Image (tube, rainbow, N blue to C red; front, side):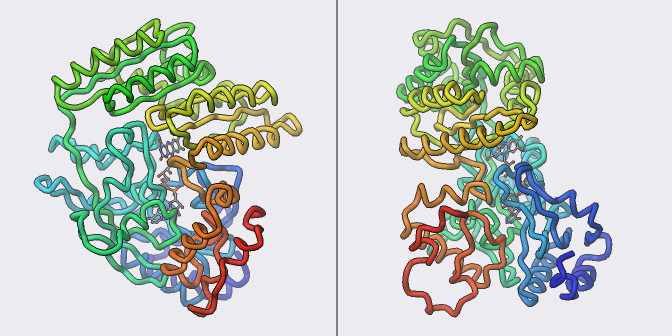
Length: 489
Ligand SMILES: Cc1cc2nc3c(=O)[nH]c(=O)nc-3n(C[C@H](O)[C@H](O)[C@H](O)COP(=O)(O)OP(=O)(O)OC[C@H]3O[C@@H](n4cnc5c(N)ncnc54)[C@H](O)[C@@H]3O)c2cc1C
């Protein structure tokens, strides 16, 4: 354990707060928490605590604040940008024991959940009332709602139903000073600044969410899932533009290229049509009549764009089979490559064909294979950059390709992340996307919540010097922004 942490007496205090079974100090056990889903960044935490209540979280944070020890929240650790990367001189606060669904108000279509509740279990708990929780990250079986709030997570159906921020109406949080407070009033219409909106997507840098009020959505009357096969990505992309251009808003439009299909076949034998250079999964949901009408239009559009086979799921099992190929795609590439990087960037839908062509050119020029799986409807790319870590230099080459893809996204007016967050992984790209004034303003917001700079420091952008300084002393832009040194982080 870090020597300052060891002499702080924090272990004993944490044990008093949470009980002996909820504090981890054994070096081997600590290693379990050394990374999230982005395994390239690792660090064993100084101390791990697993509180069971919001009051315990508040007491833990107060102890950290008094000892000036940094702390990091962790849900299920499925994040893909290193957001939950711990610190060797800090405390990792894991919400895995805070798994209660506290209340369900069917009439108001609202539930109050603890942060460690898994995403899918909310939908399972309210299914009997004809309701579901709409944000559906592919990791929904294990990721936590607290992590979803911190990352503003999306998923296949966010095209129509929106992101986490559209489904959270109030948050109980522990501030970085250890105070329990509420943001929002549960109606989504509270006057004043939208602090629920500011907290959602703040990647654990503004405090720790301890209770989450989520909106519940009626399960649609009808759902139709189509799988359309194309010989080229260009033809599939043209179908996507034409569907959206026609005014139809499917629940989801997902696209996979030949390499992603090959990986999915190898892993889960999803039996997509032979010879496909691209497949589109188009899911329509809503009132039965609307879905039937839109299905006819989508079939016509796909055929006109060159689809040579369109399949429709006839029941829930066939729907699940179609989705299994898509949802397993990240893990499936492990079948065709020893190692890979999952990238996450956004481009305007209209730029999809050019950007996909440029990615393909990059791949040919460097010899690094790239499999494309993405939320085509909202331009959220997830290129999987494949490499062999046993071949010297190949990982570095893959990282360059992965970075060049983000440059392409920025060049085309898109974003460096659609849903996986900035974390430690992409903080160096923030100055490419935002000007100094923008970064400075974001940092001022962070410092307003966390003046001591102890709450998940070093994530999103380097923790600014203003945090911890006497308020009002700083006059100019953040020194790192002014000197251009932000690039080095
Ligand atoms: C196979 C796979 C598929 C995925 N698919 C998707 C997808 O479709 N869409 C998508 O958006 N993401 C996806 N992800 C990424 C990931 O699952 C999401 O970012 C998810 O929201 C992380 O939740 P978690 O509980 O694992 O959070 P963690 O990884 O534990 O933490 C993520 C961040 O949240 C912070 N945090 C955690 N709990 C709290 C809290 N209570 N209060 C404040 N901050 C907190 C942490 O400090 C960290 O910064 C995928 C990941 C994997 C591995």
